[in-house]
Length: 406
Image 1 (cartoon, rainbow, N blue to C red):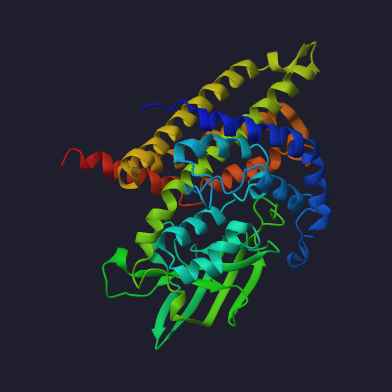
Image 2 (image 1 turned 90 degrees about the vertical axis):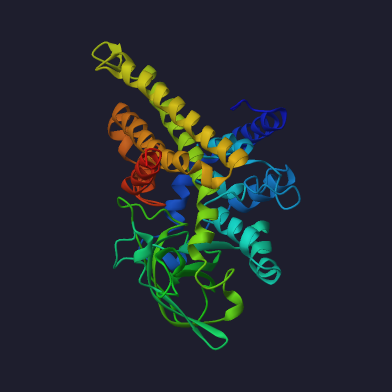
């Protein structure tokens, strides 16, 4: 395996770093502060994107730094998973940066679904505006009334009624639902209970303005609503959609999900590694600049060793993630399942530990809005549940490991 960056990747890394240093870093704190004023927690329907974002998206398009995640030379930049991974890491240093490059979750996963599994009509109607950055999308999977760690527990239903699909049920922790440009949901529900457990579910494209879809509320994570993106709860009540909105076919939901989650988890993890790198940088700068008891705090209380451990854990997590990316590109998602599951455990845990160390070195400042660390901490803890909790991924690794001995 060779994880070294080829000339094309090195060029993209240099360009994206220059873009971030020139356009994003100087306004980072300003954006965080102004987002709070633009997005009242009392009324998510009034949330707004920061006025700097749309102009930056146009700059990213002009710079050829748009749709980096999509391995298509015409619609994206034609990068492999391994080539895109370090670029995702760079964007992970800033919470709002992925949107600037149209590489934000859950849109990347939804675009991959539509790209690989959507028909021409579905692609023209939904994939094209998503690729242009004109709209945003959400993915309706997790539910409040069942243990969603087992996706086969899904209670929301999809019924075929003549030429229409009828959707009923609840979804929550639907990421991006509060965004002003969120227009469509890919809804996953139980459609064929008579089939075996992995062929019982389907995916349907559901425009958010369809009658019967009600956005009940936004959910806070450790008191943060992550505005203007948000994580919401939805109620689907006799939502009727044309049969043409079905993706692939009835009972094909899990087959689609397998294709969606492989590369998407690489993206999540590389962004998380970028966040950890930023947290470590902040910790070191703080530790060198602040003095307590006559010494820089970096030299007190074992902080030096904590910095060393953070560096080692970041490097280990990165190598494991790049290995997963290499396997996806060269061996396919099915042959990378151990690695994909492993990084979903290792990387968020590493991120949480590094961010927590940085918070500790910052003292009270690490817990307030003066630094991005509190937001990083909420994101790290959330990521250990998103796309399945740690325990589910460890169970997958265990199952595949034991299979070698049967």
